[in-house]
Image 1 (tube, helix red, strand yellow):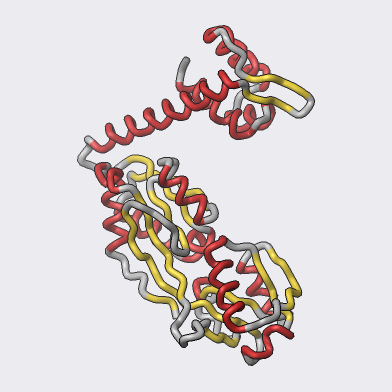
Image 2 (tube, helix red, strand yellow):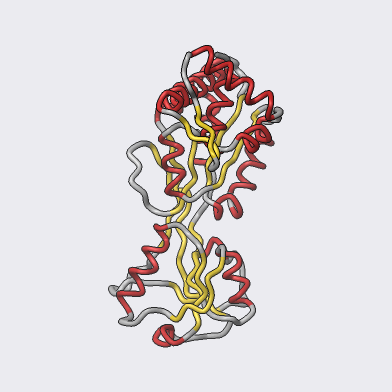
Length: 290
């Protein structure tokens, strides 16, 4: 069994589809099927069952996938260790970032970092912050840049703290919100819980949802066109001066802010590349978004 076989099993388990797996790995379907048959012959087991609904891994197949994932992780760690022996800062940096950080903060960070360390290859995935916490824990990524407060038992660094605002095209009063059209957007559970808690502290009736859009940026565009109000963190607003903003505060008058964090495992700092990047980010001035 070779590392290509580990990748086949891991990808097939993720995609649950022969055609998609072959496309992902840039091999033909017959070649993929043949390799699966050879693995089944080598181990004397049935790895997958094929039916009308696609493929289903057997118990033995599931165990083999677990082994494949462990071996891929060990192979990656071995490569990283070998790169670490070099005095140059080189290797593959795996980052996970929330979509907002990836849109508004990460590009400038990576630009400056790669100007200083051009031999580094960066691979970025975006996901919900809750999923990124799991990705860092499972070591699928070295570092996560997440938004909101999550239970993370290892190392973390505060990137920025921002206000959350009621945003509208024209001036409105908070007391009128239940009767005004609100624009909702898909976001992570942390922000949703914060906004919902603030609303329930102030109002005894639900908001009047006029639109459910895909992301914050779409919601902002709807607000800019006077189609309703939205409750948005300031990272998405930038220097937008043509919007009316009211900062959220608790019933005690305290500002309700949203924090963004860089999380990582302390043991990963043994790799020079990770330590250099963490130090680089920690030394940057993010400040507080008003």
